Length: 47
Image 1: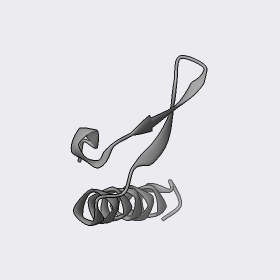
Image 2: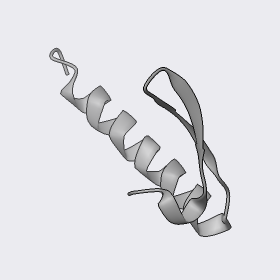
Image 3: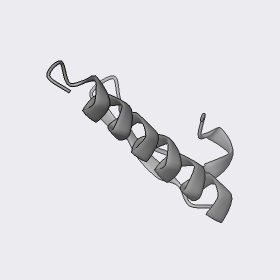
């Protein structure tokens, strides 16, 4: 745990679960691209 890998892995799992949940429920997400906020519809969420 000293190098943070367990924490990093827990964060990756949490993000993946959140993305899957949004996609499954048909909810869009907001992401940052090229200095702008872009809203992705559920069908464009890559998991």
